[in-house]
Image (cartoon, rainbow, N blue to C red):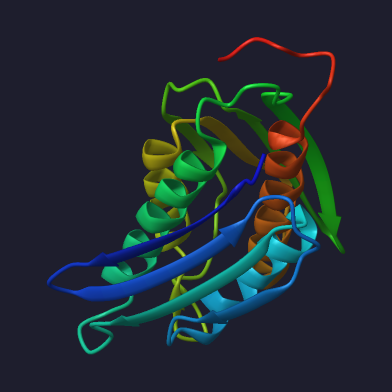
Length: 189
C-alpha cells in the first residue's frame, strides 16, 4: 500500500504544495520563506523518517502566522489522505527527546478525534524570523486536519531554540511510531 500524497492548497494568504511519503527515509526539501520554520520541519521529517517536500509562498509582510498555520493545515491534510482508513497502523506513538538542557515529551493517537494539549512555556517571543507562539498554532492545525490527538509537553527547558527543536524532533518520532504498520493489526481505526 502506497502511503504518499500531494496536497496543493491556495488561500488569500498562502500558496502551498506538499509532497509527503510516510514510508520514507527522512529526505526533505522545505522552503516556506521562514528560515527557522524550515529548520523545524526538516527536524520533524528527518526524525520521523518522512520524505517531505514543502513549497510555500505566503504573506510574510504582515507576519508569519498565516504561513505557519496553513502549512500545518496542509500537512495534516497530507497525513489524512496518505493514511486513508488507517488500516494496520500502530495508532499510538510516544517519545521523550532531549536537546541539551531541554526535554520534550510528545504522545500521539491517530484516533480520528482532533485534540491538542500543548504545554511549552517559551520565554522569548521570537526565534529569528519565527514567532514562538505559532508553534502551538502549527500543531493545532495539524491535529485538526490529520485527525489525531497530540500532547506536547516541555518537561524541562532553558534555551528556547533547544526547546523548539526538541518539540519538533519528538513529534516526528512519535508520529513515525504511531503510523508504523504493525502486521498483527488488521482492524480499521
